[in-house]
Image (cartoon, rainbow, N blue to C red; front, side, top):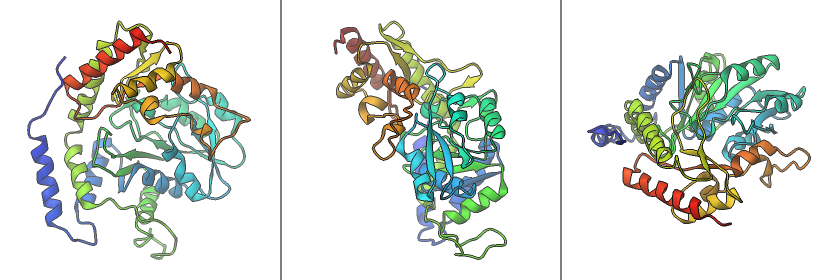
Length: 369
């Protein structure tokens, strides 16, 4: 297996960034963010894209556009990070954590149904590690309970399932462009939507409501400053124009690691679901070894970055600010405790990938907790 490369990528990025810098200072942010939004909408096949300062800002704007506020409840998988939930706190809403199915990594819709109340307004599916749940099940559940769907698609750029692009199944899809994401700009994010009013609200929300939606006065609401800076938009635009290559690169990196570990005892690759075209965000392996979380932590100490070992990822419902001991999400805990998700970046060479695989295989074979 050979990792694909595209010549001229660095030069194209430098040219685009240089052009943005030459237009500064420009209090309007310059034209590059608007150009990025047009090309994002085209690339993802939706009418509207709104560029913002981070993936969290995208969720904040989208949830605000859905009218989420004090007293509202929003269903969120426990299988997620704090950044998914932070916007709900900022809006005064309450997260209600839902379990996930260890066999599929998808939401446990039976658990979700039990937790719907008269105050439930929306659901936030999280496509962790780029894996996408069943979009038909999602939209059917949301329709049955009259919920908005705001997808946290931070890690899922390029993933599709049954022909549905991640981030386009609901009211809005929210993406991060932080370093390490497949479509990256150092920092930044965007949301996608088919709804004109959601896009209009999000554009006003990211800029203190200075350019208000039609029929509303400027500065008539409190909002945020979450605009995407022109240099970051320029980086994002250059990378968007090679998005197919970036997805192919990550998929090939992941295939290389998983292929090297096929015969490793105690580890088994987690295959995509039927109909899922996975972006390969991170090599995913089920750990069938004693004390699997300790094994992931041990690998991190041996120089193999991974979600649970390096970043101590735990179910969000167990975080101190959210703990609800009466209804723990055990499926989410089982998934995280038994999943090795190796953290990759575009810069990881074949030598780096082979070293990760060699360390994982060696340590799994010798593992004694």
